[in-house]
Image (cartoon, rainbow, N blue to C red; front, side, top):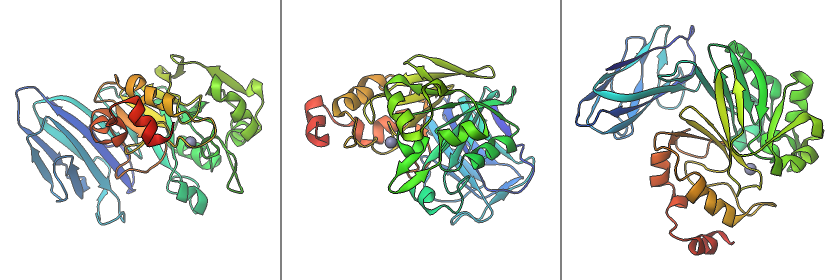
Length: 342
Ligand SMILES: [Zn+2]
């Protein structure tokens, strides 16, 4: 199998491509080739540092990051229309994801944009920049419909990102009630959020019922503006299903959203650590059950997309997170309570 991506962007712009590939069982040859349209770094998960046009690997799993930017960090790189990133070899599974252009997977209908506060929207807002929030657009790139997850800080800027991709926002999903995710007063700031969304672009807002009251109190939206959901509820964007998973702990009504191979986790889980458990409504015991039962059975190649950019990279497969994140290394609930103050 040759997995191949033709990148459709039309102008020179900062972009990040992630490619995760699994080598077929019993096979040991894989080459990742950077096509003529790209220049810059390709970092394999098992290949630290060096910059190569071709990365030859013999792992069972390779997570490739290609940062393309005219001026991003140390890697002076860029792309042009028609650029390609190609995996050649005995590949059993391959998916692409870009922060600028959405996830390109073996399901080309699936659309995902990871937007960062202060970088992609709320540019120049020092508080938003400092908070490192991620906002997500996820949906159906064929039908051109998506939902926005945790619209806050700069709603017009977020809507503009969707519009620039030719996507219509058909709903909003809330991971939890904290103001940096839904808007409201925080540290003396009045964070923009759901109420601005309803003014600029009225659409259904889906929130877990256990976080609904606090979401209303913080944002000022009314009960009739909120659609209350339980675990297992499915929201559709075009023909793409997004499943709500109740993952209490950080808040009582925290939820993750599962769509294709992506898990949008809010503050439930980061690449390192989990959401704070010392804030009102948090539960040390519930977080233990979330980590060890509710999220324990997700497939290893499910890609975790957290609610903040706290890691050394913006997303990672759950198999690696469960291996590397210390919150998964606590043997018993009693140990967890001792560590986290339950
Ligand atoms: Zn939070």
